[in-house]
Length: 320
Ligand code: TXA
Ligand code: MG
Image 1 (cartoon, rainbow, N blue to C red):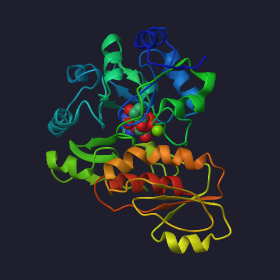
Image 2: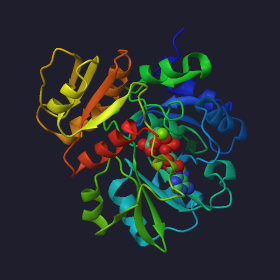
Image 3: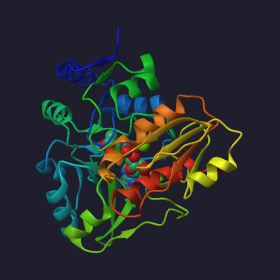
């Protein structure tokens, strides 16, 4: 029997039983468990093969709940929460003592957001605890944006994927932390820098190369297909460079010709960056399933969600 289901009451039962359910959000699917259950939280790390030093995001049902989780809300965090929640923004704030250390990897801060998906909001409403939910992919693999992606990763290792369709935004939340109450972007994501700045003014983006990343999602290699992936400013040139390879092309809006192109995915013929972001991971999943020699991915315009897409493509293409 398939683990994919739309039955919320079944999800409630499983979660109350300290087991895991993959849940839909508007960004990507999350692998969810009760934040207060050591058994459930350990199962999240084990199922994902995720190292314990990488903390989890806590998903809460509404803004009123925030004060149960964090001990201090800087003014700019409040403005951001009011502007973007429920939605694709994660705030990293000083944690309440009640938040278990395993959730935060021992840090004094906790990452928190209200997801904007009707099924997950309903689920959170019916539970009497928040959900820890990292993206529902094995460590370092491409994040899932459909219930099928999750099921094919974990098969019978989890009891249920709550099917909420394709994720509308398709790229992880934007993570913002505070250093002396000054906001800083730890991870680019589904809310563009420009949208954030429209609410709170200029904001810095944490340098990716920081030696001790505050968001390990900022580690260089992440979100990666198994197929060798290169980022390209000139696809025609790279088609020549790799002329002896079986190539997959991932482009923004243009179509390319070439004998060695086995498969080509155009993310938005209308050059709409939101549409491109929403289709990005599904395209990478598809290209990665074709056993190609190489994926050539086009560099996106460096503004709006193009910045976030480029960030993910750089990680997909990173080789150490
Ligand atoms: O859109 C999303 O954020 C999805 C959905 C399911 O909500 N979740 C997600 O979780 O992307 P995950 O675990 O794949 O990425 C969370 C990132 C990690 O890079 C983690 O290091 C960072 O958040 N993080 C969590 N707690 C943190 C903290 N206290 N300080 C700094 N970074 C933190
Ligand atoms: Mg992840």
